[in-house]
Length: 86
Image 1: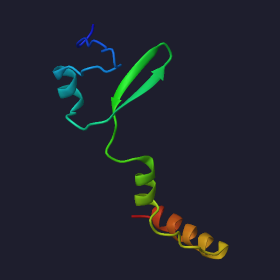
Image 2: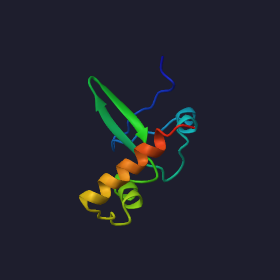
Image 3: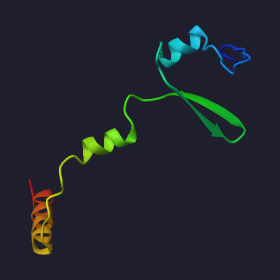
């Protein structure tokens, strides 16, 4: 069952019905993205952050380089703590 209907203008524009805007939480200036899923076209609200923004936030610091001996020692310590009798 359809939530609402829109009409395409001569310029190729549509109006997003108020019920849909409320459901998506969008307003003036919001960006929508269109995806093809088989025979359907799905319209979604674009998130506030791009994947590049998320990558920069997660990987902002360079990794700490460790030797193989340090990695093995760290794993051994972790396993001993994790499986120690309580």
